[in-house]
Structure formats: structure tokens, C-alpha cells
Length: 170
Image 1 (cartoon, rainbow, N blue to C red):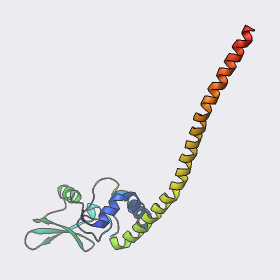
Image 2: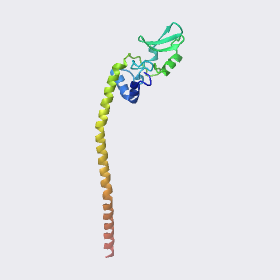
Image 3: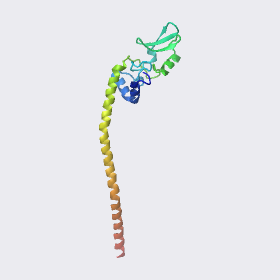
């Protein structure tokens, strides 16, 4: 999925929702819950160990995951740590801790669930806004009450002081 793909921008904006779907519906770790950068049709990034190098006539290597070509590199390459680091930097796969072998899932299967979850989240946010607005209004009314009673308290204290003072003179 390229940076100009509108789905990629939507996923990046609400990545936590996409990660929840990946984890709960597909058992994909959150870190792998990003589409493959070079293939917009694949919803999640595999472990680099899941890729197989296939040498093509000429001078290139196709990196294949379950019969899908995810990326091509120049020359005949073997699956080395250096190559895996390059593939990970290109957004094709992931290396490191907490990376699992995952199933190949089409983006077209995941994206409608993502859009539905985003819509539900937006509806919940809108429902929460009036409650927050009421709390702020109540807080503002309380502050207004406190500020309105301060002069009365000051006048009462002054009168008590003057009354106490005049009782001492008399």
C-alpha cells in the first residue's frame, strides 16, 4: 500500500482500531498490523522469515509469500539478515521480537471491518461530547456560585468584625 493510497492514510490515522481488529479477528500482533507497503491487497505484514526468495531469469529475486510476490530485489539474493533488514525498511515484512508467522489476509476483507469500527468510534465520541459539555457547564456554574458568594462572605465577615469591635467599646 503506497503512501498515496487513501486507505493507508485512514489506517494510519486510526491505527489503534486497525490493530485491535488484527489482534482480535486474525490473531495478528499489533506490530504486524500494517498493510504491506508494496502490496495494497495484503492487510498485514508477515515475518521476514515467511518470505521465500525465488530467482528469476535475468538478475532479480522475487520475495514470495504464499504465492504472492511482495517485492523484487536486484541480483540473486539469499535470505540473510541484511536482506531481511532491507525488506523490513521497505515495509514489506518485519523482523525482531514479537513477530509471528501470520496468515495472508486480503485488505478487502479487513478494511470494511475497520471502517465500521471507525464509524462506531466516531458515534461513541459524539455521544460522549454532550456529557462532557454538561460536566463543564456544571463546573462553570459551581465556579460562578463560589465567586458570587465571596463578596457576601466578605461583607458578613466585615459586619461581624465591626459588631465585635463596637461591643468591645461599649
